[in-house]
Image (tube, rainbow, N blue to C red; front, side, top):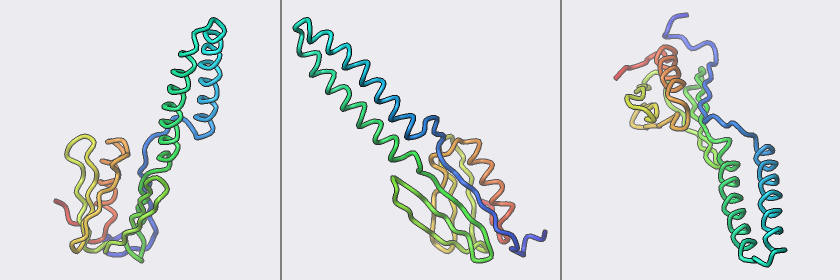
Length: 155
């Protein structure tokens, strides 16, 4: 297919690796609560009541960490290249932002250092994508984008 014609829709999805689903996190939290409060109840029966307070604080901190993890589990970017343009959809903590770039003037800057995002720039609009994705996935995505864009300019 010639590079100057956009016929097919292409799509890239960049997101962090999540090893546990929200349901699995909830089950892990319930299991750790049962275990921790069971130990605290044993100490309470022995008359050492401050252990219960520290257990409650510990489980509150773990709950806050799990809520944060669940809230950001769906974070990432979706990049869509079609005849309508280059659409970048970013999701952060449930908030979605959309940026449309001109594929004919988009410049793709691949990450040069580990943990650096891909930079997409067209007509003064700059978008960083892939900050949460593994480095190998970012490099592959940047290469594919450079090849797929009809007017790709390389840095």
